[in-house]
Image (cartoon, rainbow, N blue to C red; front, side, top):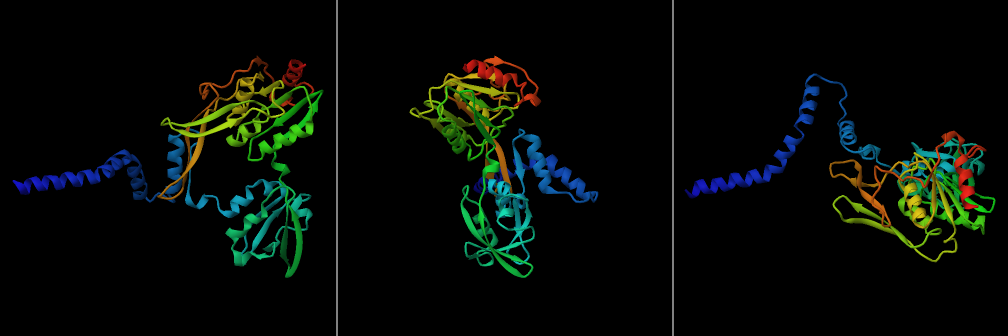
Length: 364
């Protein structure tokens, strides 16, 4: 009796221990069967990593994706996709020698203007030897703030040259500004980590005006924190809350009272491409008394984050929703303008830009 009872416990314990694995096997049986079948018929070049990527993209929303180990950003990719690299006109890769190979240089941009050419090898940055420091550790020293400098030791055709590289980030600001009549016009194409600084710079350079136009047409969004920090100069106290799907807070970003630019009329221009962080800007302005002109926005009220997987690779996934002030999440709904004016996208910025004309009329 005791033996049977003990055996039952042992079997039960074994089942519990294997339960998760058995459930996983049942859940993904069709994937395993498909892979086994393709192998049995000698299907060429079955790529498990791409299969996982397809499974994730097919089962998730359009912002969720899987990145295999070998595609996760290296130091090389990190530098090459930076604002400094784009604005300064260069791309790099690891040279066979262990130095930094300058694989591309754009004529008349900062890297070219300092004397560096395609095919050059950077052997030292600010006196630090590249091979000794390691490519992964030193290549990011090419990055930095606008107009800062670093000294480059360059190897070219067996000779050594020394150049002073002045970094440029202006190309990536994705924002322009000017004074229209006596109103400040801020045209924000995208939101990145520099946007809040450029909004402040724009407001300072435009100076004293009677109101502002925020042109967010064709703006698909970007960095949430920079969005809120930029709008902090224009609106009073408010908040943007990012909430996980399980109901817990992911982050809360706040705007505050007391800035010199607050309290002036704001008109926001939007269209059916305006999304994500650009919609946050729109709602913050509207809740501060602003007027929205144009067409209904996309309605992207969800945010994404990343998870490094133990089995390899990285998962970029939709983690929850965001709300602005006391509004409900408008994901899938969009923001309806106060004044709806439909217009062909090609007319933006032309003499026939009737949405911009309406904004100036409202402010007057």
